[in-house]
Figure 1 (spheres, helix red, strand yellow):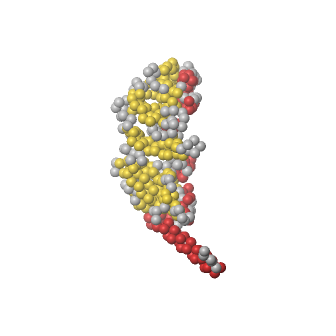
Figure 2 (tube, one colour):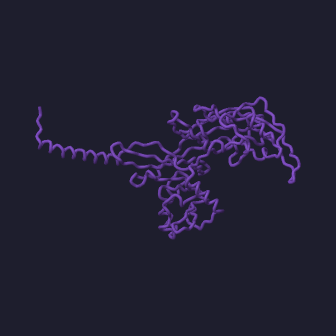
Length: 401
């Protein structure tokens, strides 16, 4: 049996503390120089569709936390990812900023603001930068802007809420002036918005909006297709639409009732005639709603609108239109896109990996879509974002990584 004296115990305690201190020092040094554990990337700000040399790329900006097991250090990386808009495949990644936790990294913000010629303006944590639209390399930062505009030295803000985009970088300087900086010379000129309301909206989009829409914002339930009025309604919704004595249901269909998640919608057609005479004249109205025979039903269905309008998207070569709908009402349900021909017969159906559509861009031969998928068990669900290209001729899908 080993007997320990009081002196041996006293000697062991400092030796143990010293060893622990060395361990912490080595762990700290290891943590600074070695890769840590990366958390899930989270998109920061809206996506950007960037054009360069006739090619278009989808830019997404992500924030990702890096931590180490044996230390309390952390740092936050901002990375740009470029995606091919023809096939949804990842093209390049560029790390544009790293902010340590001790420097406020957990609260650091970044945004893609807008494209200005061959440059793209971003806000990165404490100021604006201009990146090359070709590959994301830095073309201008605070120092470059102050060199091009000596009158702005010390007056460029460090907070996101003082920046927006309107054909160039717009900032409110520290002395309360509004200026716009344009590439490629990065010279600042006085800026006057179209209106104060317009400026507030631009500022909201640049500083608060995370670039997401809801599925219903991409849909309309009726419209003119090949010189015919076509509706996509349930029996009850169609009955209301047909009572159009004043022409309001034809002119402003947004006021029609919506049966919501259980709505199984059918295709209808109607004749357009005139209302009775009013003091201001007669108006177009709907008559004789009738079901289109031989056509399908669509759960929560609506016509996909043409980008920037509230009219159904009409396709060509051959003629067609698109209906966005759901496969089922429970957690296993997903959005689906069906192409109909000019007789409204279904040509193909593509089931998307989404529970909610948040973005879409269109070309004559394809759609580029972004959306969210609810994942995980009920009560502990999360969200995963997907990028998808849908080929319009045949509905073939290409899903990004």
